[in-house]
View 1 (cartoon, rainbow, N blue to C red):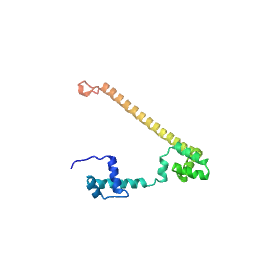
View 2 (tube, rainbow, N blue to C red):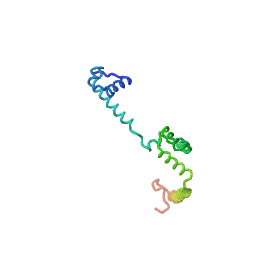
View 3 (spheres, rainbow, N blue to C red):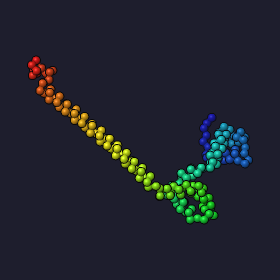
View 4 (cartoon, rainbow, N blue to C red):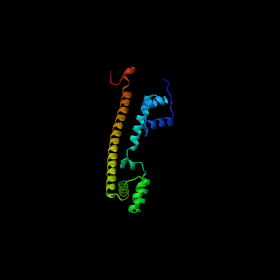
Length: 178
């Protein structure tokens, strides 16, 4: 059987006939339009899945995440000037719940006021931890510098000793008397 590509318009008309108010069976529609019954059934199943997905309401958390901080602040400021009746219309128009505005208002106030003691404590802890880490690293660096200096001194001494005693493999007489 050859593969046939159908346009989206044709596909949507067939799905409407399968799922619409005057629905027809996939078998009967297949006989009528010449599209395989399995294809029509698959289109109908996908359409049912998409309908269920679009009907689901977004939770409050999901509604809040698609708005920028500037937009949230603007909405909170606008809503604070409205009367109770106007607020209901405003919420419907913006697709919000009063709980959304309350949460955004709390977030804005906590961001502006906050508790400076907590912020200072957190930054003080961060600074002291950083200073402690810096002291540890400096101590480790000094230890490694000393070890490197010691190894360098040993290498220099070894070379001087070889120069004084001579290399035993080159056949030169050594000063030890052998």
